[in-house]
Length: 121
View 1: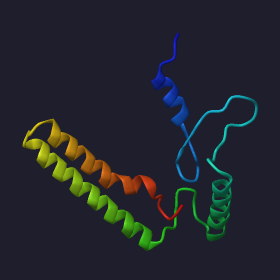
View 2: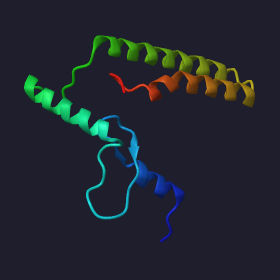
View 3: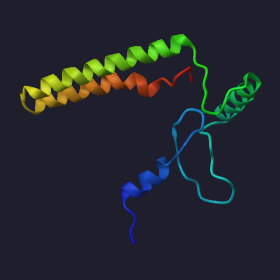
View 4: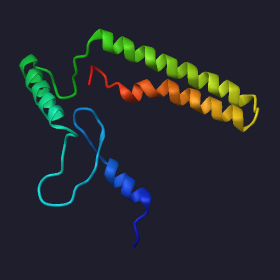
């Protein structure tokens, strides 16, 4: 049985950093697979778990600054607007150039959501 490039990509992205969610690549060899993409994320996750225990929070509960939530809502609203605009533009069926511009507008609206994790680094 041969492996396809999609199989390799799926294997590489199946595990994600427990702190930031970035994909982790599989590594061969002994030992446990990595859970974090960098040591600072391992430390931050430890500190967050310790603080959550002090506050009596469950694993599924999270404290987030209102400013971070408001910024996230703003970015989601901009993405929704870009999607609506692209849907309207594509409904006019003006050809591949319009589709390309609509696609790029949606990608640019989504880019800040990809770069900025909720609550910081």
